[in-house]
Image (cartoon, rainbow, N blue to C red):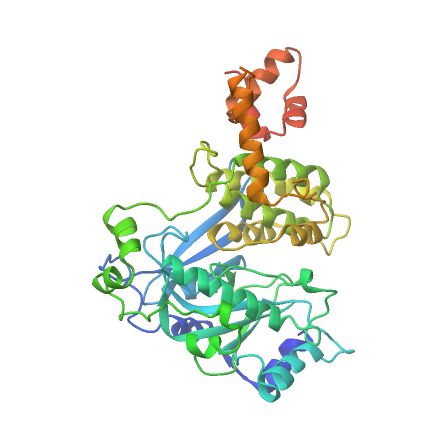
Length: 456
């Protein structure tokens, strides 16, 4: 038993997995098993097994949490990595678009300080920051996840996941996480070491196994919270101001409160407005992490790949060939074996759990990482774009003017990105005796992609 778990067991009451999830999803909140009741939704569990499918990828199971909580009992009997978000979903797809209500905000707290065998960081968190200084909110539960803890702030009433509310909740969680990762609590060098995660992030479930083979344990540490309570611990700019709790906001209310949103999303059924990044950003980063990833930074290389995939997953004039979730998954499972091959120590393998955890970032459309933070966490340099002293607006205006002049003079401009098929085809035409391995190395395309179009 680690020091943090021993301290929690001495000071708080342990909560059984079923009771923990009954607190998050109160009785009658979720739909009944096998039903599709209007206005009722389900929770979703992801289980990563040790089995391999025919294509070599790990077998991943999905379970739905209904009001009976039978899936909780089932996964707690397994020895596999299982994660769950405190969110209800419409249907069986665990996506931001399908998310309906947020039942808790959970913060992952790792690298806790120790003084000898004493869990000094956890003690400072509770006794100093929560009880005495009251600079941090009191969590409803503290979950001992193995190497660290998860702080759960469970809402008295769930919060609807409208786009504007979700974005504000993400901002609140970002500042709250930064405050929790205080130097007296965690052993970090600077703010770039803080592990920022989205509100859609899934966490290792109480009752399931940890990396070291123990079981995740939850402890009840406080009462349920309100959004207003959490607002009191962050700056005004990061507070959640536009929200109502579940059952207060009907579609009629939404039409009156958010008329533009209602017309765009409900009447016209338009997708959420987002900036469509070119998939070249994703493809370039995938190539770079394969070539430059280092042990100790592999997880963040893959997590940022998931973030870039999300940014490049929206259709637009600059992005006619968006990145799909399936493409990200295929790439990540393929990269897993390469990353594992970099392992030099038995206590630092790169596993399917790391991959699944990293891919969670794709589910959150609001998660962001500054360029400097990505550089620091991945140890891969990303030079800033050169604007020759001009601001972005001036720089873009000059670039567009240059393009217009080139078009007028009949100079050929490459304004689009060739498809993967065209890339492979062009390479084969220029290298008639080339091999698949050479094509993968020189084009940056995935091996599965090259195989797919090799004989086309």
